Length: 70
Image 1 (cartoon, rainbow, N blue to C red):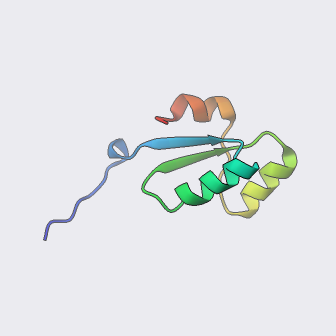
Image 2 (image 1 turned 90 degrees about the horizontal axis):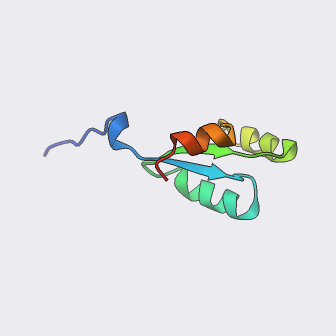
């Protein structure tokens, strides 16, 4: 049985802007277990703390948008 190996070029990057918001949390929670590379962005300090407490790395919104495929 052949094993498929994904390279970084094969993996799409998704940016979640507002990752600590109501919709952002739901989207983030679904994407975190996917094969996508996920960039999490949040403007509010309280939201940033929530993202960090979940063990997720924050990315500035402009950088996340520039780097994302989706």
